[in-house]
Image 1 (cartoon, helix red, strand yellow):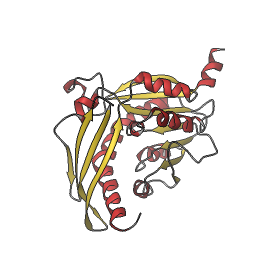
Image 2 (tube, helix red, strand yellow):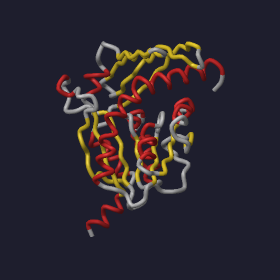
Image 3 (cartoon, one colour):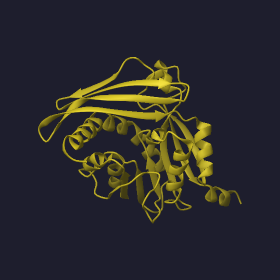
Image 4 (spheres, rainbow, N blue to C red):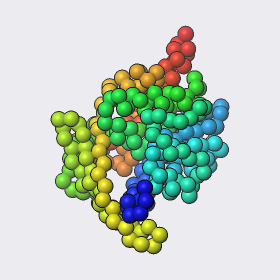
Length: 258
């Protein structure tokens, strides 16, 4: 990636970090801290899959963990590198790692970007390969109710600051449960204003579909919690905004029952 194309992706990564990354992480860190305190691991190792700009890794590092982040976006990793050092550029469906981690996270509804059942299962299988019997996998997905409510809204999401502006227009197609977003705006990159124009897609996954994909990958749910990061549920016709999963290896759960 070179020239203006690289700058455009870099501009989006910066605007995303400022407008969405920081805001969401202030909410989700409560869930992560709660989990760490309720189930403290014996070994302090952490893998953040689809790590984005590195907020989760920064939190785990402050708590004494040796943290590694994986993301496919080089611009996101460039921002993450300002916070943490151990980063790998890779697809979350094929993690190039040969070790296990006590805690694995995948946040920011990253798994909703998996649009086919096989891709979702592949992501879970890759995570399973980095887990031991003592590991826990923590992730969030968007609750399917929010797609017609939020992504189907005619009002765009708008955020701006002194050095960026981000506008996200979304649509949702019920027939195939695919949501689309047109992202536009600008951000300052090395002192120069760079325009942003990108398209993104997500799929709405039901809890039963996620459970089935986990089971196929050799994982089992320990707990599922409703998660409303911004207190939006009362204003929406939705059960909740997100689902927050805690999972372990299926072999581990079998041994616990025996």
